[in-house]
Amino acid sequence: MKFDLKKNKYLYLEILCVIVLLIFIIVLCISRSGGTKKSIEEISSPVIKVLQDNQMSKKTNADAIKAFGFDLSKTDGIVYYENENIMEVSEMVIIKLKDSNDAQEFKTLIEKRVEERKNLYKSYAPEQYALLNDCIIESSSNAIFYCTAKNADKLFEIFKNSL
Image (cartoon, rainbow, N blue to C red; front, side):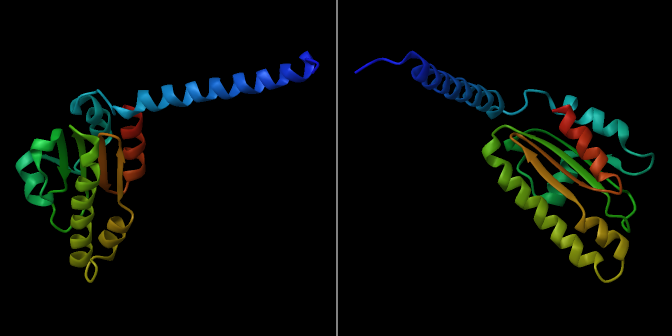
């Protein structure tokens, strides 16, 4: 059997490309699996700066527990803002979790609150109901963002960039 260097050169090149691609994927997965190492203040402060005047006011962790039923022992911090006017549904929550495996539990609690509020506002506040339908509930590994507001998209973009 004769060894043809030209044919084998392409085979070696293909194998090398596959190996480089696999290494890239592994490095990418390892670097993203731990979630953000930033504090809740570092994650939330750029978002808070963009909140419109009188759009929402800061609430306590006790308010977040009452509204959503969160287990604070599973978090590294919560930032909760809500509109003071009970006729407005605007609110925003940013959560940094200790374990990214708890993200679904927290998202489920948020979704439950949104559904309850939809049922409440559906029949008498169509603008507020529309805001609830367009709310954003997203998680990125160990951080969760929830917002019901007119500028929720903009706030979410800033949140993503702060991670």
